[in-house]
Length: 228
Ligand SMILES: [Zn+2]
Image (tube, rainbow, N blue to C red; front, top):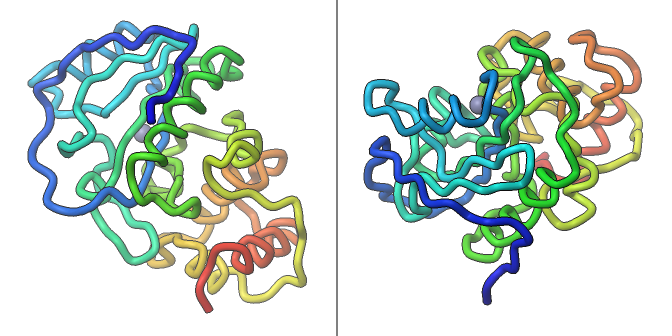
């Protein structure tokens, strides 16, 4: 069953990949964090850079296909989610063109999000990726990464079957235990974990500080996705 895309897909093969030995079980979303989409695609195809992703989605919705899904692209780096480390092995990576916090972070245009949504839905149809394993780079590397950031419309995507979301606020518990159950690596500094959690699940309050709303949202999300 194919996915109908409104926008063109352009094949721009990257040499930066190798063999994958396991099953795909994560979808990792990024922003490019560079001044232009063209510069990002160029870097992701540069053998000297040793980085890549499976796809790049430009701001007008154009999708660049760099690495075939069966292969391991090099986008996640040192990473952790729900007990799994080094997520390049088990993930598909989508780079979403945006200058990022360094170069002028700005809202993701509707055409771009529509393309990301269609692409992600297709990926989820082709691989056994649970909704709770649709993550941002900042979720799996919270001490190093901020992308795709608090402007990314996680709630809208979850409403279309890509990822998880809750508007609920449950009775707060031990927030570190809740974050661990959701998937975060609690060996890292708690303020990094709180910031990453807020960027994804409480984007109107990215403070890095534990407050009532954050604790309540984490408790609610743990009930939805976590393990006890
Ligand atoms: Zn990233």
